[in-house]
Image (cartoon, rainbow, N blue to C red; front, side, top):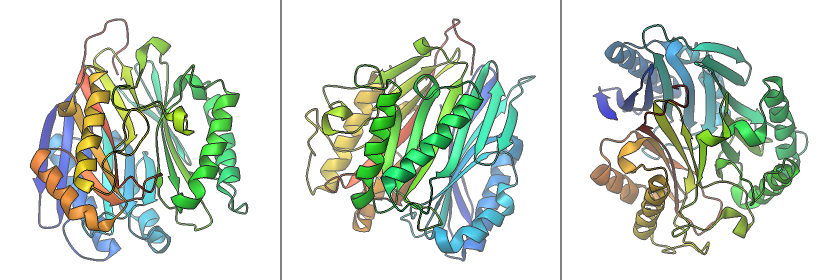
Length: 386
């Protein structure tokens, strides 16, 4: 894994690069360094992309996925959707989770750049993007919301799943065999999380996704859509052409308990093997022990340390470690914990592309939650390269 930075008076860019057999994989975090309007900060991000493209010889056609973290989606939506920054065929996610360094907007971008004759074919349709490459179909969906006339997180989640299952079926994919990662953003999570969880549990049970089979690696966190009546917002990532033996679910039972023991249904992490790399998706992870109890109640320092211990334990089951992390999102419940958390990250992971945002966790006692993606080089001739 290679890490680099680009710094200007308008934007800071931190990124990772994994050099695979037939493609390069980048994860980039961009944050404006100006206290301007939303338009001015979007322009700073646009400049950042141009600088990155020039340095790494990429183009906007190489972008697979982008997520914007914004401070006021309702009032900023017109500027965000109209920005020239997004004139490319990529999966675009926007969620209100305020960047805690004071910005109005920050950007996470994933790029896959083919080598030599490697071609990534894209098919874009509304909230869905499918990238076809080397026998795999990488399907992203973003900005999925339910029936806004039904102000109930349970019903909205069911509606979202109905739409998503139809999309999967249209590409001969299934929820159980092909969905690798989900992000559930819940408005007013302290009141609406339970309805989302109930709907998800019932749907998983319907599709034989149980404690005896498997669930899906996921983040369930506070996040808002532009329309205040949308209580649940869903982003997903699925892979077609994948074999069951290419997927491993991570548990770290000495550190964390199975999620079904406290009534939810998600995997702690998932490792996906390709011929040239292992991608590892770590769910939103908090300061929890193997009995499901909060560790270091009320202590942000202690919770940060325990959270990283848990992440390391999960990565180790995939024969990986913290050095393989390519990007990270840090969620805080309390803005007052930002300075402590930022100081910890700068001291311990100054090279890492990360962002810290305001997003209360699903259990009030958890002050921090962290998710990440890691990439590790492997050589497995039984599978196609990425």
